[in-house]
Image (cartoon, rainbow, N blue to C red; front, side, top):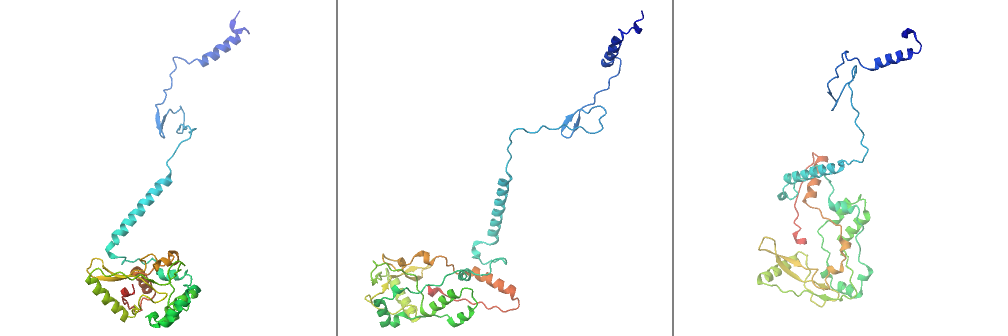
Length: 310
């Protein structure tokens, strides 16, 4: 019986054929596997017949990771830049220049003028100040209470017509004409009259200086004439002399803070806080601003010695 024609042998033949296809032929030449090549930043094998680069997909991080914040780095860089600018500014403006170097982009309005835009009107004496004893002393000694002012108040008033705070300006003008109230609030336990002027000069040099200085200020109308220790409702602070800085010359001091019942102790510091006077720096900014707006105008600069005012 021919096994090739037997139906029962066909499945075996088919199985043999399938196995023959599955088992590689030892005599057949095998295709050589390609060498690993660098693709991206990883080594990978390229499959036979691949036309495009094969990139291995990186695994994703499944756990929490930490990274340095960029804010801290930015803050450090900013701080270094600011410090560098400050050092450069200090180098460009040495301390000995005394703020005599100005920029053109600074504020052109001085501290005093800026304060006037928000200031309340200056106070007038309260009713409690007009007691009978004080009014009697003032009326009987008019020479002791002169109002001496070297400012042309009428001219200043015309210059302040358009000021945005007219009530404040009017209080200043009234003070220049009638005198300013220095914000004292006398406690009830303070004496009505107080003589605290007993402070003898320490040396003959101080005595001679004080005698000469008092006489010159009396002639200038800056000090009153002697009135004695018993004038009712009057407070007399001590007067003494101290050396000027880095000099053998002396200057006179009227000490309003000396003693328990001093004049300055009646004034609340909060009432006089916030005032800032103009300086040479403000003058420089104002001059530069005026020259920018008025390049053809003539400027005249003068110096006024106000040392005696203090």
